[in-house]
Length: 364
Image (cartoon, rainbow, N blue to C red; front, side, top):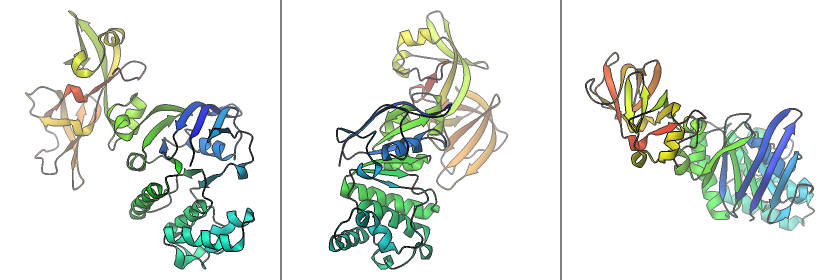
């Protein structure tokens, strides 16, 4: 186990800035998730730590040791790839044993280590099979066993569940969480799947365009997004955003949109008075679907017209047209509402967010 530190880590591929000035500290034993869309640089960070790519600049430290120029085979990290990367001509046993045999470990020690890893992941019955004789879930377990058997300081996992079906993905997710709980090995896990990030990560680093947009525990990142990208990337459906403006009148700042006005109270909104004054102008109001409720047309709230109903069993998602914006509302499944109805969208201002012209959350 070891602490991992990245200092101003940067990687350019020609004119493409894949990773830009990333600084992270991953404490010993933590499970950190790098979350973001394809091409945001999260997998490149793993490859830099593993030594599969050289950094343009910046430092990588594992257990206090600078490893930028250390041979990849001596960094004591184990990487699990999206496509499993198993040797097709080798049995499961040989695939799991390969890194130990390469390190010239004694045959008896190799056999004991492979058996321990196989028992841990319940693949003892598969040891004599070839990869082509395994299901996707079984191949993933073999890839994990090959990583575990090395007893690395750090696990690097690059979207390891993306090739599995939904049910198997859930099962394997639980297995990975249990595995981390038992082994306690520092783990950096890359995914574009927010459900994986929210359920597995002790902390999440949300990335866009090679940079970290926000870092924190899952609840913090979900409840207090730093900007509109984080707000809309996390959540299914994502946070609703309505464009308008912040205006000051007689000492009161209000959010105004198509005739609708919401007084912004610093105490309720969590926005400092000075910040509100500086942000007067273009702004966006953000509210998550579960924090909205449907009200009658003569009630307070955003006016709109119901366009679509999406019953999904445990919830009813109601799509409301609010001056051209499609606003999603999460309601109980037995809610009585029909398409074409005029409604108002009510919400607690304390559960809303206001983002300034620079897309940053105004909350202090």
